[in-house]
Amino acid sequence: MSQKYNGRVRVLDFPATAVAVLEHRGDPRLVGNTVRDFIGWRKQNDLPPHKSATFNIIYDDPAQVAPADYRLDLCAAFDGEVGENTFGIVKKTIPAGRCAVLRHTGPDEGLAKSVKYLYLEWLPQSGEELRDFPLYFQRVKFFPDVAEVEAVTDIFLPLK
Image (cartoon, rainbow, N blue to C red; front, side):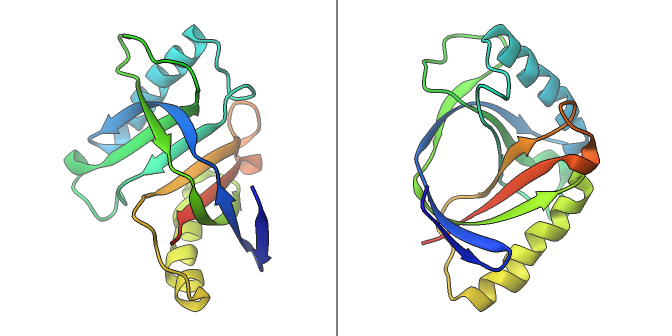
């Protein structure tokens, strides 16, 4: 990934990344159940986070949609075939392309503030345009491997 730095936000070329996905659809308060299922599948397939990068594709802002309409994909980088499984895991690709990336350190409660900064402050001043793919996160360090205050999440904003 080539990188260009612009203050706290860097612009880079993200490579196409095959991922195994568990789609969460519905109330965001129930994401924990989906996460537990996803962890179960990862354990069955020997894909812990240190072997397989973890991503979340964010289709909706939970504050802007009805709980029943909320959508989120939990993803693990995975080049193999996703066979039949009881978890509902499917294969997708995070497409290659330019992205603005902002590193967020700390608990998930602060992610919304970082996302708003990208959309409302950085994007209008950057001269960049959004690409037709949702915002996504890469979970670089996260609980239980580190305390929540030490969690590291890279926020990717796809650009044209």
